[in-house]
Length: 240
Image (cartoon, rainbow, N blue to C red; front, side):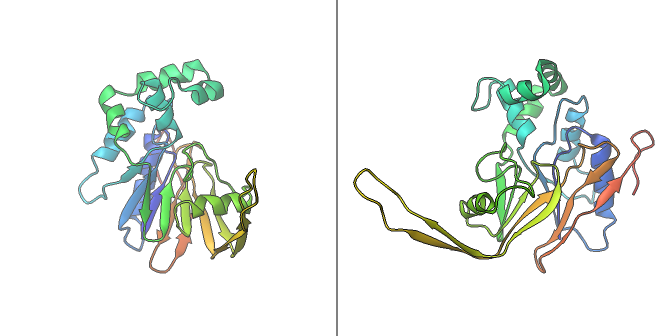
C-alpha cells in the first residue's frame, strides 16, 4: 500500500499527525510519496524539510517531488525558470514572498531543487499539478478532454495530483478522441485515439486547513483507494 500526501505547507503538526495515522494503518504502508507544497510562507517550513529528510527509526523515507510553493521559492532565489515569483506575489503579496525567503536556509532550498518533478510507478503518474506544469490545477470540475490530455502525455492510466488540495476520484470510462491537422495546403487525415478507462485522483492537503489533514492510501495490487481524514489539535499535538 502507498501513502500519498501533498500540501504540508510548512505545517509540522499536521505532518506529524498524518505520519502517526499512517503508522496506525492495519495494512503495512510500503511507500510514502509527498507530491509537493511541503513549504509555504510559514516559519516552520525549515522544520518540515528537516523532518522529511531525517525520518525516525522504522519510518519510511519519503519520496518527494516539487510543487507550486517550491517553484515560487526557486524563482525567489534565482533558481527557477522565471526571474521573479510573480504568481506568489500576485496571489499573496510581497510580504508573503519575504516571509518565504526568511523561512528557509539556502541549504534547504538546494535540497528542494534536487527533488523530482514527479514519479511514474507501475501504471501511475504521481505529480503535484499535472504533466503540463506544477501550476496546472485538476479538480472534479476539469473537463474530461483536459483530463485525458494530461494522461495521454505520459501514457499513464492513473494520475495522482495535489494542486487543488481536494480529495476526489475522477473516472474516465473510456471512449475516443478525434484529432486532425490543418495546414495552408490541405487537411491531414483524422486520427482517432482510443482511450481506455482512466482515473485522476486528488490526494488532499495535509496542512492547508488548520486542524484537519487529508491524504490518500492506495493499494496498487488491488486498485483500492482510501481517503483518510486526520483531526488534530494544534496546541495539544495530534490525534485522530
